[in-house]
Image 1: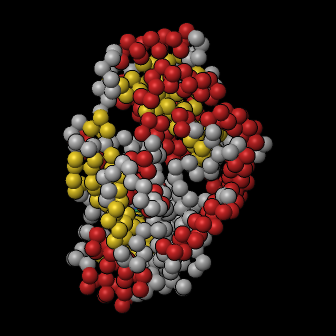
Image 2: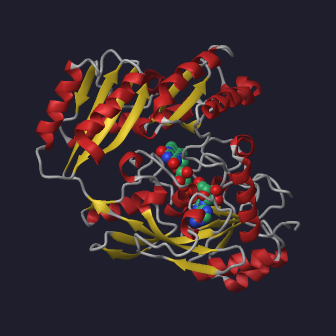
Image 3: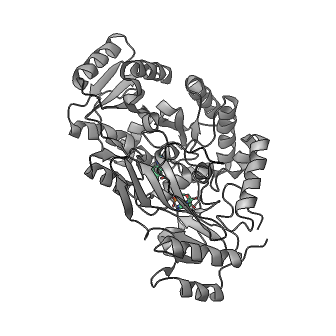
Length: 473
Ligand SMILES: Cc1cc2nc3c(=O)[nH]c(=O)nc-3n(C[C@H](O)[C@H](O)[C@H](O)COP(=O)(O)OP(=O)(O)OC[C@H]3O[C@@H](n4cnc5c(N)ncnc54)[C@H](O)[C@@H]3O)c2cc1C
């Protein structure tokens, strides 16, 4: 079915179903994205205030074959929120649907509209002495609808899982405008196919998420935060195993940091406090949230002494107060900003079985060095096997000089990931960036069934055309 661009007639019909101020010309900042790879062409920005308005917009667009691009905070890194070609459609932002609609502390459950900004949800949880553990460097802008649509990961997956694991129920508007009220608060519900988990991670291609029921958790009484220098990623993984034996499931973050990341802070003038005078080649930032009433301090000191004495750690800093904890965390959280300022030739959000991580890093470095003298910043959520393996030009060079080589780099990295049984998209999704990778590396049966699901749920293909699958427009 051929998609059509927004027309004057369509705008006039929309005006009849929307409240005032709900439709605008698209401001420029909604047409770009964090890595400046795509430029948007959508015709109008629509800002509904409630699920009924979302439903009315979607049914009108469906009747007239007009593309809809769902938009959260715009922080997605694979271009899913930007329509860059085809008949220009509507950008549907849920930013005005930003209310917390209910809070149940006995059940540790909170229900929110999809436009709630992630950091606001985290703050609301803090106010009632709970935590909402999803945490990303983009949390001040990203919205819970966008987090669900991308099944975002972040730094606490090791303990709490990704967004999917934090969600109990959804409200969704499907392509024909129908509203599914799936705002369940149940932890167990084996009634038929799991629609909720199909929508989570579907990147706006199967439905518009308008609200969600999310889990809250007890707030740890104390945190142990440490930055530990190790000789190699292999030792970092041995440290992970040792730390798990010591603290069990209370480790919430285990982040790998490379010296290149620290060098980039100096080069880009991002201000952070680095606790080592000689920067080690590899470091691990770990965060352990103690919920029990045993002495966290004694345990942490014992552990620290143990890993230093055994030689597993070559150096380390144990934060002594919340200020120092924040300083250590700032090192990890500012890496994406410093990377952005340098400008990568090619960035890779990959995951691997834990036991292959170290071999992959060694092999990938060798392969990339055959193409030229690049700088590699390899960091990420090591505890989940999720690395950001990003490749940068040398100082003084511009990334554009290497545009011609980017596809080759990507193929080398992704082939190697695939060979080791990994995934070419650990947490950012497919979007517009990795459509060909999905085709190349997916099991054909999975791909065929995915396409069938899309065809059934959005027969006209109006929901985010060109995302996950190539649009046939
Ligand atoms: C500095 C930085 C750090 C980041 N760190 C991480 C990280 O650690 N882990 C991680 O997983 N990601 C990370 N990201 C990526 C990004 O923040 C996440 O993908 C986030 O979940 C996107 O949320 P958003 O609201 O900005 O969505 P958007 O960017 O607006 O949209 C993302 C996708 O979701 C769809 N969408 C948005 N809202 C809805 C909705 N209500 N219904 C249906 N579809 C919708 C869009 O169409 C698009 O396909 C980072 C990004 C930046 C810039």
